[in-house]
Structure formats: structure tokens, C-alpha cells
Length: 356
Ligand code: ADP
Ligand code: MG
Ligand code: MG
Image 1 (cartoon, protein in one colour):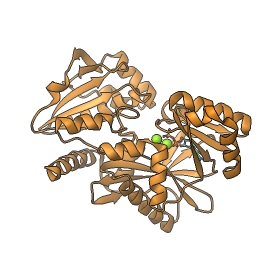
Image 2 (cartoon, protein in one colour):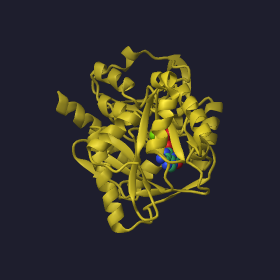
Image 3 (cartoon, helix red, strand yellow):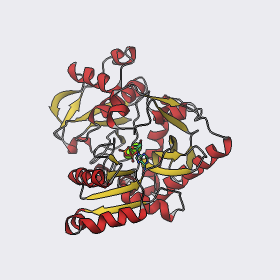
Image 4 (cartoon, protein in one colour):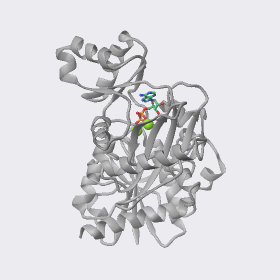
């Protein structure tokens, strides 16, 4: 069977996507799959990726940070052949698409819509779950409906902000306390997110977030640990043990610390009482169903010192290198990387067949 592995992309998470592609390529290389790598450049061009004649051992040998590994791979020209590939070349019978794209255009339902039109099985969330999971405002509304605990929040539309800034600020002051977190509705990797300690910073933060999206979210800041649960399945949902992102400082988990510094470590399973872990797993499954998830999703939570839980967000295409939280959570739940990749491909085929 053929696997079209689609990676790169126009989003800020371009490099991490390349790393994920390498991890998966190494994994399926020895199996009975024929992998056709498809690389999307930062400009959005679709190129034939390099088919590996040998696994890229240099990536295994070097336990570099994600950013460094990606930089190295790019420098070595190991990303693509430079030969364009058309969408018509991807439309094949008995092939599965494995997109490992993050952020806008990759994780938000747009490319998933293309796969639907191609009428091919593809790994991960469908159109609806991708769009809902990516949109921090819509997902919050769905979580409210599903009875999931969250911090108070206020959605802002650019037009309303431009029309009456004072009114928006008054509402923030009425419902929320400082610190507040301000986020563009449709991004990831902490891009455009700021923490505001006062109204002056709040105004600046809203202006910043509005540069990335016409819809913005202002959220109550909490002092809490960050704990994540991996979800796997289609209608039959499975959850992993929770894992904690342990930060060296109590600053927020920004792009720099996520991908470039080695300032965070993972504690799996998270050091939390059994009943808190169980509750987190139940919430994760509920969130997955609320967005109509399929394939995979990572559900991220805040857990306070007295074990109050708030769901923060879901990521329908979480970081997926061998060293990323999502695969490591499964590893600690008894499913290794290789079997996880295989399961995702099988789930894609199953969903496709059930739809026929
Ligand atoms: P992204 O999709 O970019 O990861 P998040 O909503 O997860 O966006 O925010 C990024 C980081 O900002 C979080 O991992 C956390 O460290 C911090 N953060 C976000 N919202 C809050 C909040 N309400 N209170 C405290 N920290 C927050
Ligand atoms: Mg996210
Ligand atoms: Mg996050």
C-alpha cells in the first residue's frame, strides 16, 4: 500500500512538521508500505519529497532540539527533490494520505477538505474536528456545552474592537482578573499569544493578536501545571496516561520553549493522584467527542495545586516526532511508536470504509 506523507507547510510549525515526517518515514520505511513523501514549502509549493534510500541516521544520532534537527535536515537538502508534484498525482486507489502538517491550512480542516474531495482515506481528524479543534473560540463553546470545566473567557471580533474599544475593555474588567491571556482564535505554537498584567498590556496584546486573526480570545490566566492526555480512536475512544510539561520557569510555554530551548521536560505519567488522572482521561475523551474527533488528538489541561482541572485546548495534529509528548504518552500507556503509526493508518482506512 502507498502512503502519501505530506509535510512542511506554510505555518509557523513548518520545521517541526519536517521532523515528524522523518520520524514516521524511518518507521514505515522497513514495513510493507511504499512511502511517497510530499513536501510543501514555506511558500506553499508542493514538491516531491526525498524517498529515503537509507534512513536518516544522522537524526537518530543527534539528540538535538527540534529546531536544530530541522535546520540540519534542511541544510543537507534532505527535505525535497525540488520536483513539483500535482494533486492529480496523489489521487490514487488503495493509497492513504498521512498529513503531518500543523497550524493553519494543515490542521484546520482546509487540507482535510481536499482529501475528502479526492475521496481518499487520510490519517487524523476530519474536516469538522480539525476546524473546531483549531478554533479556540468555537472549541471553547463546544466544551461548555459538553460540561467541561474551563477558565472564563471573552471572544472578541475585530470589528467590535475597532468600533468600541472601551466597551470591550469594560467587559474584560467585569468578567476577568489579571493576568489575562490573549490569543488569536486560529493559531498554534503560542504564536501571537501574550500575557497581560494590566489594561495597558491588555490593549497591546489584543492589538497583537488581531494582527494574526480577526477573532481573538481573552482568557482568565491561571497559575497551574500543564498536563496533557493523548486520545486515539474513531468512535471508539482510547486515552493515554496524562503527562506533565514541566517548565523550568513559571513563564508560559511559548514557541521558544516549545521547540527551540530545552527548558521543558516531560513527566510521564504526571505525578497526580489516581482519581485526578482518571478525571483528566474522562475529560479528554469528552473533549474528543465534543469536536467529533477521529484518529488522534492531544488534550491539554491546566491543573491547579489543589487539583482543580480546566481544559485549555485540543490539538488535532500534535507534535509527533519520536520525542514528542503525544507518542511518548502512548509509549507509557503500552503502545510503541511503530504500533501507534500503524494504528493511525488503520483508523484512517476504517473511517474511510465506514463512510462508503
Ligand atoms: P497554543 O495553541 O499556541 O499552544 P495555548 O492556548 O496552549 O496555545 O497557549 C500557549 C501557552 O500559554 C500554554 O501552554 C500556557 O503555557 C500559556 N497559557 C495559555 N492560556 C493560559 C491561561 N489561561 N492561564 C495560564 N497560562 C496560559
Ligand atoms: Mg494549540
Ligand atoms: Mg497549547
